[in-house]
Length: 612
Ligand code: F6R
Image (cartoon, rainbow, N blue to C red; front, side, top):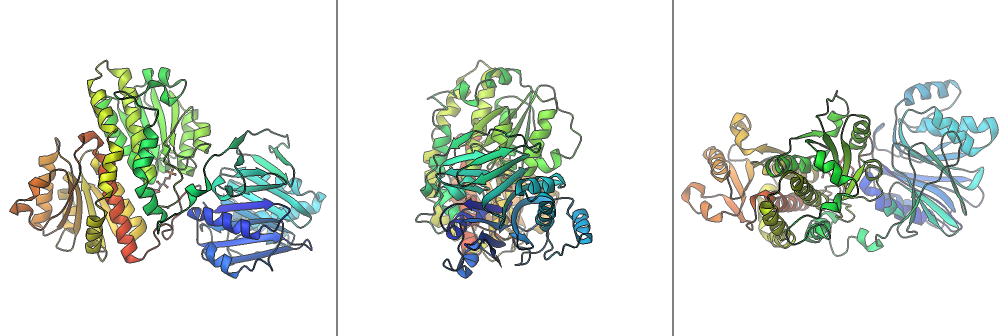
């Protein structure tokens, strides 16, 4: 995680770097810093513990001027968030460096450098790198060669940005395992962890690949591999508007992103379904042949994306009759795997850069899988570049750390995926015709659910002072309960757990008393009676029931007196996970707002988890 921005320009760039950092704060926000080379070819540096706005408030533009610089917003891994552990790090006031990632062999390197006389001023893994560059520069006075020599000694994952007072109009960047992009403009060039940071200055981007080292000056960008051979990387034009990353009228990005969901789902569907079927070509050239052979699906993801994968398992087995296994990436990558025959490996990721998921994909590519598919929201991200097949969810830029619109578009994409696979397994199109018709209703129905905002605020008032909450659901709504609980913990810091409703009596029911809110999803369908019995189990222990249901009439009876009910629109039961997610997102949001927590940047978290 952590966010990097850098620039080499012919104008003062400190403010521009800070503005870029603000766009990257989703990647980490516990400390921030900036370094520039001033008119006297001296390095100037400013760091604070805290957010970018605190850095901004102590930075006086007129005193902090320079045309080449680097900046950083941190998500602490080694060393507590503090000024001394904030980037950039400097060596002998000659070199400054920012880093995103983890240097695994930092303690060995630190010991060696200390023996060579280097003094350390931080507890981080990063500081070794800048001293290594200094040490190597002394040998032949060449910045690029010094960076290369330093990098050759590193183990781990890193994206680096380096400036030197000896080369005041030069910026060196390195990528190994953590994302880094070059922004290209007229007479000035930039680097950043994410193109979003640079949209105000350019739309032209070059994505670095692992082992790339870029030598960037005002007019020129040269990219080398670690053998110092020049390599060519494609230039991409990004058409995301600057406004897409603004908060607009909303108090928080999360609320904006929740409200954008009807449009996001519609965009995910656009050009991919007709009135009655999923277009077969939407998973790209080659998908058709692969889908015909598939006998098993392996889904791998983290966090919210993992919950989407769990929902997909229910769909794959019930609608397409394809066995499916789902696993969190951090587990998948470190155990011995025996791939099933003709198994398609699928990663789900909003960012396309999550370290564990990316590592799992790389591993799968070396194993005996039929093929790999990345379902992802960010075009050009590592996963979309590395998987054999790609499918973009088109949620638009998601900035709130708690994922919302990315999740519902992942569900939408997965539903299309399941129907596309189903086409290969059965000639019976009747169910597909019905499901596609229902799917096309989803954006309008999500709009309707969003209108329940005021009712959800009332629930939030009742929950805001609780310390615990249980979320329950059955079938494909069990992962939705887990997602609701995750949203609640992430942004409101209330301890919440998601359970399959039928599991309550096997343990968690012991927690239920008159103080325990139990939030449940109860759509009509085959499992309705079972869900109602589970709710009675909760009521009998005095638990407070909060029910989302399209079967409101069933809750008029005395046996549910006191239960809080919100009416949901009716839709085919298979699609209920998409609709029932929305009120759970709103609930977590309103509880967090009432509690006054930092909704968009919850404590200890960051959005794009590019470290293990
Ligand atoms: C929770 C959340 C995280 C991410 C997880 C994976 O709201 O956003 O749990 O879902 O870190 O990230 P991606 O989807 O980018 O791989």
